[in-house]
Image (cartoon, rainbow, N blue to C red; front, side):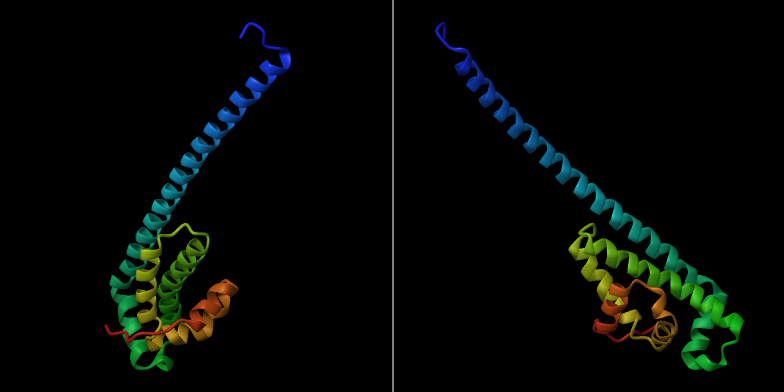
Length: 158
């Protein structure tokens, strides 16, 4: 090692520097992976909170009675009834839109996304939801509208 030239020391320094860069990149990849997992967990939690809040709104007697009334005869709803009904439905559909956009950004777990799709496939088959979508679907993100229009429907029962 005594007879190393300056160029030899420079080569050794380059090798050490390259190893340090690789170690830094591996560390950074691990950090990003951890952050991705945290973002997915946060997105899942946000959806669950939103779902609980949106569905809890339907425990309100006025909203639930308006929904049942709309199921029987939508045309009999007053403007006040429609406002109550559409307010409740809007929250649930907006939540689905948010989940859709989170999923597209890979922030939502695929298993949860499948469960969400099954729920909404059922909900959106209900005549009240269909009517809401016909009247208010244009309020939503274009890609989401296309997704909802193309998705399959399963039977919904109260």
